Image (cartoon, rainbow, N blue to C red; front, side):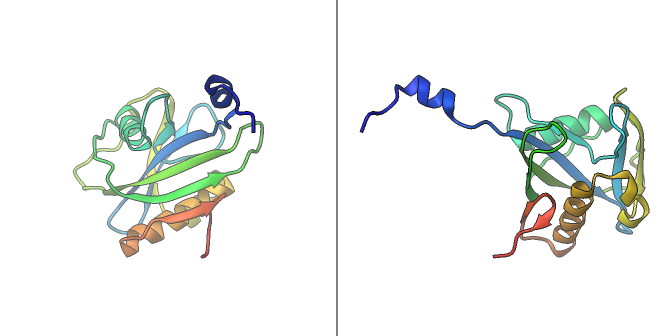
Length: 161
């Protein structure tokens, strides 16, 4: 069997996009959503994982950049395989538990990419979210409420064993 030289082998390996977000909740179960200026749908704080950056570091960085909040990202709620769609390549999307928001935390955007921020029940904003994100957040909220275990999803649909 002929093996490729190492550099050629590595160059042909598939590449996947990665993103990480943070699920923050109110005491009454609402989820913190942000309205980005650069796309029509709302999201949770988060973004693309940079080269040589761990997903948990991305989630923490994006939360700090977008809302001025700094929290450790120690608990993964969901890892979702997002299929290629609308010109975007497939991705692995991580959702971390940002915990319960304290009433004293003033929520306001600290990044010009974010137009507004608020706490919402998912049924109030389903039309403002990409369907896969709405499904992913529903699974993540359930995992957070139960205290785990983390869920594996395909386009926001929880995988069953």
